[in-house]
Image (cartoon, rainbow, N blue to C red; front, side, top):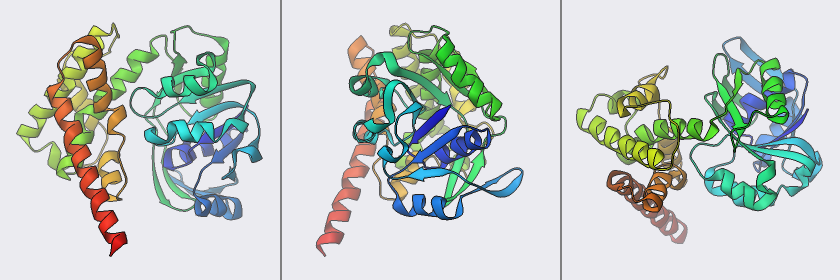
Length: 316
């Protein structure tokens, strides 16, 4: 299978290197010239439970270099989805499928407007990764589940073929007949901790040590579960506490969420596709979401202050 990753950060490289080693023609498309140059020159350095090795990967900043592929896996930041896909249409041929493995909700709608809903698949992954530097990642693939599915819940040969390609490359993958439920399940985990750590600057150990923050998290999760129920979505969890516990499973007390890391780097966050998605669904279905709306407002305020400081720094 010929596969292109649109966004070759830690996660794209972790999954992409596994598929490369599994024998698939896998392209890592990323806008960072330094990252791409390092991979083209030296290969991708992968550190994992088996040690450290260099994987000879195909990497480019230009989608046209890869040409049409069988599958585009989208892993750019949520707010770059539209522009990234539009700039990478050279990857899309007559039979190309497009799979989002991004966090949050709403990417499938953005992608559908660009390539057509009939091409779009959805999925979630619990694979982990850390970008150590250009062309260098820490990969957490072993035992981490990836779930893919058709938006209408059908189990089709095309989605099964993707799961087979992943499994044969050492990526534990299943096909879901309820991918929307799976996406909401993952959303609950993101709602549990992302915004709260971004606002407070706390690590997981600190967050889970504060009872008052736990109550806020449970309230936010509860609102998301109510919105999902109103939307007719089948969740695997019945109580907010389940998402709260799942969010911390297997992670160290020093863990910092991606939302916190984004703010620490001076970048905007994916809040609009996480807590913001809960607020939008709540408004659409008449479900009150005051806690999530407050968390969104706080993150937006932090982003505004950060942007103003950056402007003042440039002006100075």
